[in-house]
Image (tube, rainbow, N blue to C red; front, side):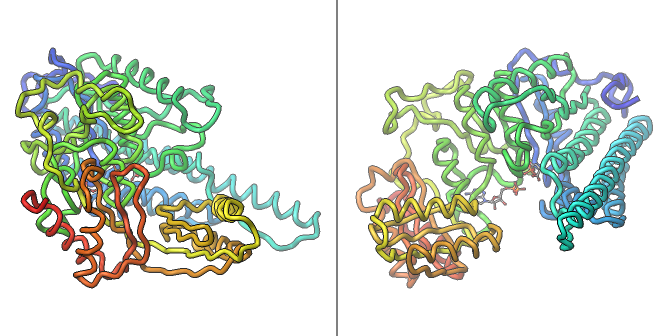
Length: 539
Ligand SMILES: Nc1ncnc2c1ncn2[C@@H]1O[C@H](COP(=O)(O)OP(=O)(O)O)[C@@H](O)[C@H]1O
Ligand SMILES: N[C@@H](CC(=O)OP(=O)(O)O)C(=O)O
């Protein structure tokens, strides 16, 4: 019998009464990232989920486990297994799945005291890993068959240059990575039950029926549809705590290509909307959003409240605390998002919610969150001092400078440049232009080959020079548009510290001033700006 259907045991691990999810308060969604599930599962079960029951109804969303870094986590291992399964004859994917199986069984054995629950968990892990191996083996067979057809076709066409398909289809990859969230949630459900919480495993892999189609990408229709589906599924849990796989099936266009890594944040956001939650809590290993990356700037301070626009700018410019798609739907539904630390559950964290001040282009200011009882000293009502909100850096930047050969008019020049970038699927992070000159900063983690091809093509329109090993340094803050001279202070501070500036750009949003500097200067520059521009008495 799978955990999904196992009846709660009334005497589990000495807990005579299983805690129910029957509080009168509204829903709070608690999303836990992979490294938190990997390192602090017990703390999550006891000090966070169990401790919150009683006041609110809780829904838990988990990512795939990472015991050390995300790079070494289950999702990356699964992606490696998928690559291996592509190679005809390779059996390495079996070793990878075995290592994943073993790490989940070991974690269960270490954490779970009830033999009955542990045995059940082990059997569920075996089943899940068995399904995964079958799927990977089938993908390998399919690939071999495709390879044979290619061989025949190319021979017919007199082309003997053979290629093995070197990329697994995005949909197949989605199904493979989904196993990571399923295993993490099976473990978390078992652990919660072991600690006296009546929990139910909720596997979302078929929440989107295969018949569901969208016209183009993940549009608003999809964002309205999925929360309803999720809410319906959660209602079936009645008064058990749902432990939901942050993986939500094969979405139109594929999860990895349409949403990308970090998709479990989006899942929790849509669940919050579907359940009309009081709050979405994203639990991490940092106290919230800081004025700068606390690993790089020791004097960085926690920001109590931040607007979604500011959080989005920080996310795009190197401080990715939550997935950029998380905010829009939740804020639309007037649900606050709170970033909290699993290692410090008592901390207030950072609340992401719009302030009630008019923004340019908007007639009506946003209303405060419906469920928050605002107090007069509430930070949402307190005007912050006029200083930037945060400073951030994004490394591995390459700058392309294109000087026009004046064979086309200025508007044609820009159109040609952008169609080249579009053709090679290159996204520009920052741009600065004059009629005959364009400087563009791109993230260099793009496919090196695409970048090379694009550069060759850009040479048709002018001379191109390429500068590598750069960093985008950005000041972000909603108050900056009223701060006369802030850009001047930013650049003079950098100049005084001998930081050379390669390129400057002020975002259209007016809440971001960015420049490009050498990567070797990045940490020093960020610390200098933080010291000089982030103290109240200074401005
Ligand atoms: N402004 C910022 N505020 C908070 N964290 C930041 C900021 N900029 C960068 N970071 C980094 O983002 C990371 C996010 O938290 P964590 O949960 O540990 O990472 P992950 O989601 O990658 O597992 C932290 O390690 C922190 O150093
Ligand atoms: N496990 C997935 C999804 C995710 O959201 O991860 P995390 O919450 O650990 O960032 C990934 O690594 O992409």
